[in-house]
Image 1: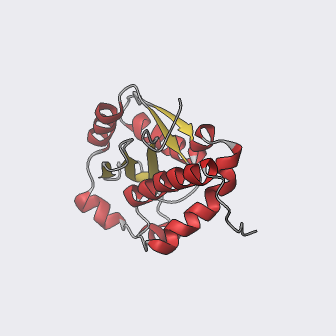
Image 2 (image 1 turned 90 degrees about the vertical axis):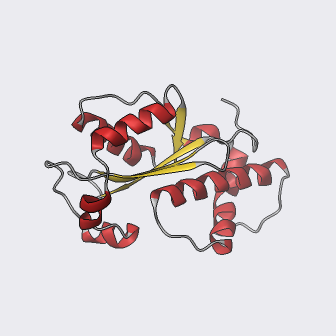
Length: 177
Protein backbone atom coordinates (compact mmCIF):
# COMPACT_ATOMS: atom_id res chain seq x y z
CA UNK A 1 0.00 0.00 0.00
CA UNK A 2 1.50 3.32 -1.06
CA UNK A 3 0.92 6.02 1.51
CA UNK A 4 1.25 9.70 0.69
CA UNK A 5 0.37 12.85 2.58
CA UNK A 6 -2.96 12.80 0.70
CA UNK A 7 -3.61 9.17 1.58
CA UNK A 8 -2.66 8.76 5.20
CA UNK A 9 -2.69 5.41 6.94
CA UNK A 10 -5.57 4.69 9.27
CA UNK A 11 -4.06 4.64 12.76
CA UNK A 12 -5.35 2.68 15.73
CA UNK A 13 -4.24 3.31 19.29
CA UNK A 14 -5.33 1.38 22.35
CA UNK A 15 -5.19 2.43 25.99
CA UNK A 16 -5.27 -0.45 28.42
CA UNK A 17 -5.81 -1.31 32.06
CA UNK A 18 -2.09 -1.95 32.39
CA UNK A 19 0.66 -3.85 30.66
CA UNK A 20 1.26 -7.53 30.50
CA UNK A 21 -0.75 -10.51 31.58
CA UNK A 22 -4.35 -9.79 32.47
CA UNK A 23 -4.50 -6.30 30.94
CA UNK A 24 -7.36 -5.45 28.62
CA UNK A 25 -8.43 -2.59 26.33
CA UNK A 26 -10.20 0.34 27.94
CA UNK A 27 -10.17 2.89 25.11
CA UNK A 28 -9.63 2.61 21.38
CA UNK A 29 -8.86 5.57 19.17
CA UNK A 30 -8.90 5.65 15.38
CA UNK A 31 -7.49 8.37 13.12
CA UNK A 32 -9.06 7.91 9.69
CA UNK A 33 -7.11 8.13 6.43
CA UNK A 34 -8.54 11.54 5.51
CA UNK A 35 -6.37 13.11 8.22
CA UNK A 36 -9.40 14.80 9.80
CA UNK A 37 -11.93 12.22 11.04
CA UNK A 38 -11.37 10.24 14.19
CA UNK A 39 -13.30 7.97 16.53
CA UNK A 40 -12.86 7.12 20.17
CA UNK A 41 -14.49 4.33 22.15
CA UNK A 42 -14.42 3.86 25.93
CA UNK A 43 -14.98 0.22 26.82
CA UNK A 44 -16.84 -0.93 29.92
CA UNK A 45 -14.89 -3.70 31.68
CA UNK A 46 -16.20 -7.20 31.16
CA UNK A 47 -16.82 -9.18 34.38
CA UNK A 48 -13.67 -11.28 33.85
CA UNK A 49 -11.52 -8.18 33.21
CA UNK A 50 -10.26 -7.47 36.72
CA UNK A 51 -6.62 -6.37 36.26
CA UNK A 52 -6.15 -2.68 37.06
CA UNK A 53 -2.83 -0.84 37.20
CA UNK A 54 -2.91 2.53 39.00
CA UNK A 55 0.28 3.61 37.17
CA UNK A 56 -1.46 3.08 33.82
CA UNK A 57 -4.46 5.02 35.13
CA UNK A 58 -2.20 7.97 35.96
CA UNK A 59 -0.82 7.92 32.41
CA UNK A 60 -4.13 7.80 30.52
CA UNK A 61 -6.26 9.51 33.15
CA UNK A 62 -9.17 7.08 32.89
CA UNK A 63 -10.47 5.52 36.09
CA UNK A 64 -12.21 2.18 36.27
CA UNK A 65 -15.25 4.03 37.68
CA UNK A 66 -15.29 6.24 34.56
CA UNK A 67 -15.27 3.13 32.36
CA UNK A 68 -18.08 1.53 34.34
CA UNK A 69 -20.15 4.69 34.07
CA UNK A 70 -19.41 5.87 30.51
CA UNK A 71 -17.88 2.86 28.75
CA UNK A 72 -19.73 1.04 26.01
CA UNK A 73 -20.23 -2.73 26.06
CA UNK A 74 -17.37 -4.69 24.46
CA UNK A 75 -19.78 -6.22 21.88
CA UNK A 76 -20.93 -2.77 20.75
CA UNK A 77 -17.34 -1.48 20.42
CA UNK A 78 -16.27 -4.58 18.46
CA UNK A 79 -19.26 -4.17 16.13
CA UNK A 80 -18.54 -0.45 15.65
CA UNK A 81 -14.90 -1.15 14.78
CA UNK A 82 -15.90 -3.85 12.29
CA UNK A 83 -18.42 -1.55 10.63
CA UNK A 84 -15.98 1.36 10.46
CA UNK A 85 -12.89 -0.59 9.38
CA UNK A 86 -14.35 -3.53 7.43
CA UNK A 87 -11.76 -4.93 5.01
CA UNK A 88 -9.22 -2.21 5.68
CA UNK A 89 -5.66 -2.28 6.92
CA UNK A 90 -4.98 -0.16 9.99
CA UNK A 91 -1.58 0.72 11.41
CA UNK A 92 -0.27 0.71 14.96
CA UNK A 93 2.98 2.10 16.30
CA UNK A 94 2.77 -0.46 19.13
CA UNK A 95 1.56 -3.45 17.15
CA UNK A 96 2.44 -6.14 19.70
CA UNK A 97 0.40 -4.49 22.44
CA UNK A 98 -2.45 -3.07 20.36
CA UNK A 99 -3.09 -6.25 18.36
CA UNK A 100 -3.10 -8.27 21.59
CA UNK A 101 -5.66 -5.95 23.20
CA UNK A 102 -7.82 -5.91 20.06
CA UNK A 103 -7.64 -9.71 20.11
CA UNK A 104 -8.77 -9.70 23.74
CA UNK A 105 -11.74 -7.46 22.84
CA UNK A 106 -12.90 -9.77 20.06
CA UNK A 107 -12.22 -12.93 22.08
CA UNK A 108 -14.46 -11.79 24.93
CA UNK A 109 -17.37 -11.24 22.54
CA UNK A 110 -16.73 -14.41 20.50
CA UNK A 111 -16.05 -12.57 17.26
CA UNK A 112 -13.18 -11.60 14.95
CA UNK A 113 -11.93 -8.27 13.68
CA UNK A 114 -12.92 -7.73 10.04
CA UNK A 115 -9.87 -5.54 9.51
CA UNK A 116 -6.14 -6.13 9.60
CA UNK A 117 -3.68 -4.46 11.99
CA UNK A 118 -0.08 -4.03 10.82
CA UNK A 119 2.89 -2.28 12.30
CA UNK A 120 3.25 1.30 11.12
CA UNK A 121 6.91 0.57 10.42
CA UNK A 122 5.81 -1.49 7.38
CA UNK A 123 4.52 1.73 5.80
CA UNK A 124 7.71 3.72 6.32
CA UNK A 125 10.92 4.01 4.37
CA UNK A 126 14.21 3.94 6.26
CA UNK A 127 14.64 7.61 5.45
CA UNK A 128 11.21 8.43 6.87
CA UNK A 129 12.03 6.43 10.00
CA UNK A 130 15.19 8.55 10.31
CA UNK A 131 12.97 11.66 10.66
CA UNK A 132 10.35 10.08 12.93
CA UNK A 133 11.60 11.32 16.30
CA UNK A 134 12.42 14.89 15.17
CA UNK A 135 8.96 15.13 13.59
CA UNK A 136 7.31 13.81 16.74
CA UNK A 137 9.32 16.18 18.92
CA UNK A 138 8.30 19.13 16.74
CA UNK A 139 4.61 18.22 16.91
CA UNK A 140 4.71 17.51 20.64
CA UNK A 141 6.32 20.90 21.36
CA UNK A 142 3.75 22.68 19.19
CA UNK A 143 0.68 21.04 20.74
CA UNK A 144 0.26 20.09 24.37
CA UNK A 145 -1.96 17.03 24.23
CA UNK A 146 -3.62 14.72 26.69
CA UNK A 147 -2.66 11.06 26.59
CA UNK A 148 -5.83 9.49 25.22
CA UNK A 149 -6.34 6.98 22.43
CA UNK A 150 -7.83 9.24 19.73
CA UNK A 151 -5.41 12.08 20.51
CA UNK A 152 -2.48 9.66 20.36
CA UNK A 153 -3.76 8.18 17.08
CA UNK A 154 -3.91 11.67 15.54
CA UNK A 155 -0.42 12.51 16.83
CA UNK A 156 0.97 9.29 15.35
CA UNK A 157 -0.73 10.05 12.03
CA UNK A 158 0.55 13.65 11.99
CA UNK A 159 4.05 12.42 12.86
CA UNK A 160 3.82 9.97 9.96
CA UNK A 161 2.86 12.76 7.56
CA UNK A 162 5.52 15.18 8.81
CA UNK A 163 8.31 12.58 8.82
CA UNK A 164 7.27 11.61 5.30
CA UNK A 165 7.44 15.24 4.21
CA UNK A 166 10.87 15.67 5.82
CA UNK A 167 12.13 12.54 4.04
CA UNK A 168 10.80 13.72 0.65
CA UNK A 169 12.33 17.15 1.09
CA UNK A 170 15.55 15.73 2.56
CA UNK A 171 14.88 18.13 5.37
CA UNK A 172 17.93 19.05 7.40
CA UNK A 173 17.19 18.59 11.07
CA UNK A 174 19.64 18.22 13.90
CA UNK A 175 18.93 14.70 15.08
CA UNK A 176 19.00 14.18 18.82
CA UNK A 177 20.59 11.06 20.19
